[in-house]
Length: 152
Image 1 (cartoon, one colour):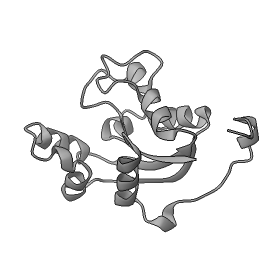
Image 2 (tube, helix red, strand yellow):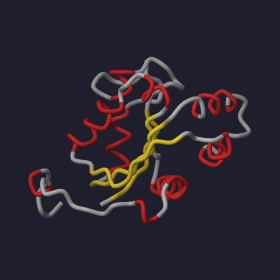
Image 3 (cartoon, one colour):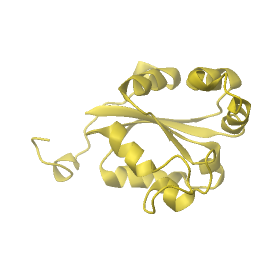
Protein backbone atom coordinates (compact mmCIF):
# COMPACT_ATOMS: atom_id res chain seq x y z
CA UNK A 1 0.00 0.00 0.00
CA UNK A 2 1.14 3.50 -0.79
CA UNK A 3 0.21 6.70 1.00
CA UNK A 4 -0.28 10.14 -0.46
CA UNK A 5 -1.23 13.55 0.85
CA UNK A 6 -4.03 15.83 -0.31
CA UNK A 7 -5.36 19.24 0.62
CA UNK A 8 -8.92 20.21 -0.13
CA UNK A 9 -8.07 23.83 -0.82
CA UNK A 10 -10.05 26.88 0.35
CA UNK A 11 -12.06 27.01 -2.89
CA UNK A 12 -13.13 23.39 -2.39
CA UNK A 13 -14.22 24.12 1.18
CA UNK A 14 -15.99 27.39 0.30
CA UNK A 15 -17.80 25.83 -2.66
CA UNK A 16 -18.99 22.94 -0.44
CA UNK A 17 -17.39 20.31 -2.65
CA UNK A 18 -15.61 18.46 0.17
CA UNK A 19 -18.10 15.59 0.32
CA UNK A 20 -18.08 15.17 -3.46
CA UNK A 21 -14.28 14.96 -3.56
CA UNK A 22 -14.03 12.63 -0.55
CA UNK A 23 -16.71 10.34 -1.99
CA UNK A 24 -14.85 10.05 -5.31
CA UNK A 25 -11.68 8.90 -3.57
CA UNK A 26 -13.61 6.45 -1.40
CA UNK A 27 -15.54 5.08 -4.39
CA UNK A 28 -12.19 4.44 -6.10
CA UNK A 29 -11.19 2.24 -3.16
CA UNK A 30 -8.70 4.60 -1.48
CA UNK A 31 -8.69 4.64 2.32
CA UNK A 32 -8.55 7.83 4.37
CA UNK A 33 -6.08 7.17 7.19
CA UNK A 34 -5.93 10.77 8.49
CA UNK A 35 -7.99 13.93 8.01
CA UNK A 36 -8.32 17.32 9.67
CA UNK A 37 -9.59 20.81 8.98
CA UNK A 38 -7.17 23.66 9.62
CA UNK A 39 -6.03 27.06 8.48
CA UNK A 40 -2.64 27.06 6.79
CA UNK A 41 -0.43 29.79 8.23
CA UNK A 42 2.01 31.77 6.07
CA UNK A 43 4.83 29.88 7.80
CA UNK A 44 3.33 26.47 6.96
CA UNK A 45 2.64 27.62 3.39
CA UNK A 46 6.32 28.54 2.99
CA UNK A 47 7.33 25.08 4.22
CA UNK A 48 4.80 23.29 2.05
CA UNK A 49 5.60 25.28 -1.10
CA UNK A 50 9.32 25.76 -0.35
CA UNK A 51 10.33 25.18 -3.99
CA UNK A 52 8.07 28.04 -5.11
CA UNK A 53 8.73 30.73 -2.46
CA UNK A 54 11.13 32.70 -4.69
CA UNK A 55 8.82 32.72 -7.71
CA UNK A 56 7.01 35.93 -8.61
CA UNK A 57 3.58 34.33 -8.35
CA UNK A 58 4.18 32.85 -4.88
CA UNK A 59 2.56 35.74 -2.92
CA UNK A 60 -0.73 35.10 -4.73
CA UNK A 61 -0.48 31.37 -3.97
CA UNK A 62 0.22 32.05 -0.31
CA UNK A 63 -2.68 34.50 -0.11
CA UNK A 64 -4.99 31.91 -1.64
CA UNK A 65 -3.94 28.90 0.44
CA UNK A 66 -4.03 30.90 3.71
CA UNK A 67 -7.29 32.66 2.79
CA UNK A 68 -9.67 30.13 4.31
CA UNK A 69 -9.89 26.74 5.97
CA UNK A 70 -8.61 23.63 4.22
CA UNK A 71 -8.92 19.91 4.83
CA UNK A 72 -5.65 17.99 4.93
CA UNK A 73 -5.79 14.22 4.50
CA UNK A 74 -3.71 11.12 3.94
CA UNK A 75 -4.99 8.52 1.50
CA UNK A 76 -3.77 4.94 1.23
CA UNK A 77 -4.14 2.43 -1.58
CA UNK A 78 -2.47 0.67 -4.46
CA UNK A 79 -0.45 3.25 -6.46
CA UNK A 80 -2.24 5.94 -4.44
CA UNK A 81 -0.05 8.81 -5.68
CA UNK A 82 -0.65 8.08 -9.36
CA UNK A 83 -4.32 7.24 -8.84
CA UNK A 84 -5.00 10.51 -7.01
CA UNK A 85 -3.11 12.59 -9.59
CA UNK A 86 -5.05 10.96 -12.42
CA UNK A 87 -8.34 11.54 -10.60
CA UNK A 88 -7.46 15.22 -10.07
CA UNK A 89 -6.70 15.89 -13.73
CA UNK A 90 -4.53 18.63 -15.22
CA UNK A 91 -3.53 21.48 -12.90
CA UNK A 92 -5.48 24.01 -14.94
CA UNK A 93 -9.16 23.19 -14.58
CA UNK A 94 -9.86 24.51 -18.09
CA UNK A 95 -7.47 21.89 -19.51
CA UNK A 96 -8.47 19.02 -17.23
CA UNK A 97 -10.39 16.16 -18.82
CA UNK A 98 -14.10 15.76 -18.10
CA UNK A 99 -14.59 13.09 -15.45
CA UNK A 100 -11.63 14.31 -13.40
CA UNK A 101 -12.22 16.36 -10.26
CA UNK A 102 -10.72 19.50 -11.79
CA UNK A 103 -12.29 18.83 -15.17
CA UNK A 104 -15.73 18.62 -13.62
CA UNK A 105 -15.49 21.41 -11.03
CA UNK A 106 -12.62 23.83 -11.76
CA UNK A 107 -12.02 26.54 -14.34
CA UNK A 108 -8.82 27.97 -12.86
CA UNK A 109 -5.07 27.28 -12.71
CA UNK A 110 -4.75 28.32 -9.05
CA UNK A 111 -8.23 27.62 -7.72
CA UNK A 112 -8.09 23.97 -8.72
CA UNK A 113 -9.74 22.54 -5.60
CA UNK A 114 -7.26 19.88 -4.48
CA UNK A 115 -3.52 19.55 -3.99
CA UNK A 116 -2.06 16.06 -4.38
CA UNK A 117 1.52 14.97 -3.74
CA UNK A 118 3.52 14.47 -6.92
CA UNK A 119 5.77 11.62 -5.77
CA UNK A 120 6.77 9.40 -2.84
CA UNK A 121 9.30 11.88 -1.43
CA UNK A 122 6.91 14.83 -1.50
CA UNK A 123 4.13 12.66 -0.05
CA UNK A 124 6.30 11.67 2.91
CA UNK A 125 7.46 15.27 3.45
CA UNK A 126 3.95 16.71 3.22
CA UNK A 127 2.39 14.06 5.46
CA UNK A 128 5.03 14.84 8.10
CA UNK A 129 4.31 18.60 7.81
CA UNK A 130 0.62 18.17 8.60
CA UNK A 131 0.32 15.03 10.72
CA UNK A 132 2.09 13.43 13.66
CA UNK A 133 2.65 9.69 13.40
CA UNK A 134 0.02 9.04 16.08
CA UNK A 135 -2.62 10.82 13.96
CA UNK A 136 -2.37 8.20 11.18
CA UNK A 137 -4.97 5.47 11.67
CA UNK A 138 -3.93 2.19 10.09
CA UNK A 139 -6.86 -0.08 9.28
CA UNK A 140 -8.18 -2.29 6.55
CA UNK A 141 -11.83 -1.75 5.68
CA UNK A 142 -13.95 -4.87 5.61
CA UNK A 143 -14.84 -4.04 2.00
CA UNK A 144 -11.22 -4.47 0.82
CA UNK A 145 -11.67 -8.08 -0.42
CA UNK A 146 -14.44 -6.78 -2.68
CA UNK A 147 -12.36 -3.91 -4.08
CA UNK A 148 -9.33 -5.80 -5.47
CA UNK A 149 -7.95 -9.30 -5.91
CA UNK A 150 -6.09 -10.83 -2.95
CA UNK A 151 -2.80 -10.91 -4.88
CA UNK A 152 -2.83 -7.19 -5.75
